[in-house]
Image 1: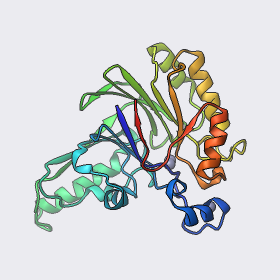
Image 2: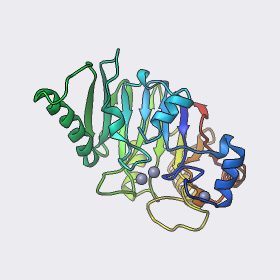
Image 3: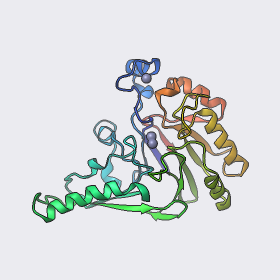
Image 4: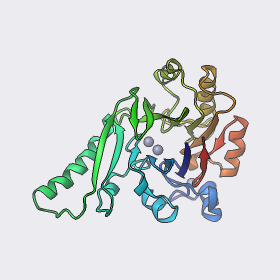
Length: 280
Ligand SMILES: [Zn+2]
Ligand SMILES: [Zn+2]
Ligand SMILES: [Zn+2]
């Protein structure tokens, strides 16, 4: 599997719009890997992960081609992961897109789709294209075949009401754990991984917070990422070949890309950045 990261930031992006902190000032000055847009990735150019507020910017400036991406996994509907309005458009030459969302999160998108369909039916709006948005509910701990990928949503410690999900994504004998947004994994997540006998080739974890300053239980810092990696390693889900990466990085981390790479390396982890491509 080829994983391309288009956005690797937490909610506010780096630089944050109103922020004067050192990390945001550095990003404004240096650009490059120090600028982080909201989380989005594409696997093998065809399976999307997230549809955030920056999807347009990734399309306009970063070479993202969503026309090839018919299936999109959504972890939850916070704005840095999902902006449904951007799919309610009038594209030409394409018939559909499928969103796969946690069951508790899908109502908003279904309502948007239905509003547009109702406007067509009652004549308030004229249909000018054949593009249809389909929304599918996913349940935690069920495995689904989505475009040839075996996908299992797991319960994230994040937004319970939204049913926030982590994802295991498998294809051709390879397995990825997509691990954000979340705090430390729930026991039922670890139990599932252990009982299923998962062995991951690639793990990406939530690193929103400053090291040892966990101001919320719904995200992680480097030490909690390390703790999760150790637990997965103990149960045999990681081995020497597994690449472990942190992403969903906020300015709260208080480190430039280079500084964070150095800090993460101490724990045997790498740091994602916008534009990074990983072959698993
Ligand atoms: Zn987020
Ligand atoms: Zn800042
Ligand atoms: Zn979130």
